[in-house]
Length: 248
Ligand code: BJW
Image (tube, rainbow, N blue to C red; front, side, top):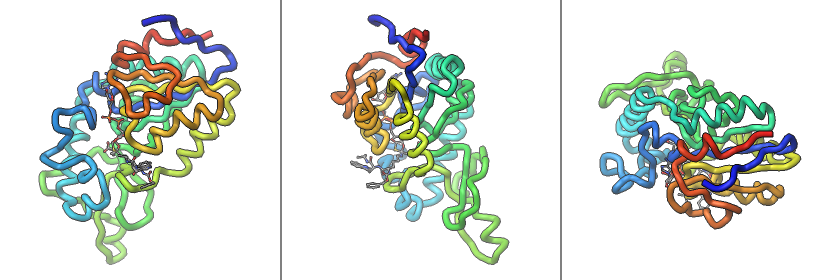
């Protein structure tokens, strides 16, 4: 890799991560797999409200499998590098992750916004109870029901606390991210391990540029929005991130 990226005392760093950052921990990415399918389903079909309405047991199988997988792996040097940057930069650091595997938190990151939700939270598909911590790996055809709705004489299904296609991201999360960008004195935006195919995350680079930010992509392959970055560092995030920055 060429010269390091200097982070001086007036720079704020926003990092956006995607599935590529967890790939070196052994978690498969979405679009890079051989056929992009899970049990012959397109990801858009499994990770969508329509998919859940049609076959909730199949959707819970998908997420239970992913819970089990995420629990069985460990954060890699890319996750640890970002946790260490946060320790050095404090409030001048924010991590927005599209990953739902919890690996950033397990590496020690605290200022993390999980914009697509969390594998380890569940909520009701109908009532407004708060999402709750849930690590259960449900049985093959098991679909959990909502205890609160049942106690009120109703019946509804629990669902993973995940932002599916066609669903809105939490406006509070999006606001936190845009406020971080707008408050930055000097903004540096780094996206790592993401194909730039899914919005609104794929549009953060444009927002960062509107705020005058420098934008860098760390990715193994060309991203769909790659042309919008000032610079692309091609490589594996677990190898690039640990030595990319020089913090003043
Ligand atoms: C490495 C590496 C290594 C590998 N090191 N690199 C504007 C235009 C067009 C459409 C839309 C739009 N705005 C919204 C939409 C609709 C839709 C969308 O974006 N569709 C696109 C497919 C076109 N967006 C939405 O529906 C979002 N909601 C929304 O916007 O609501 C309002 C609205 C709705 C409808 C219309 C308009 C507005 C919600 C999106 C939710 C995404 N959910 C998912 C699944 C749930 C999470 C889960 O189960 O895990 O989130 S989809 C899936 O893709 C997952 C990921 O978080 C997300 C992004 O994928 P990511 O992380 O980029 O992974 P990959 O696999 O694509 O890429 C990995 C990359 O890493 C590759 O490039 C590799 O090269 C690289 N790599 N190893 C570095 N070691």
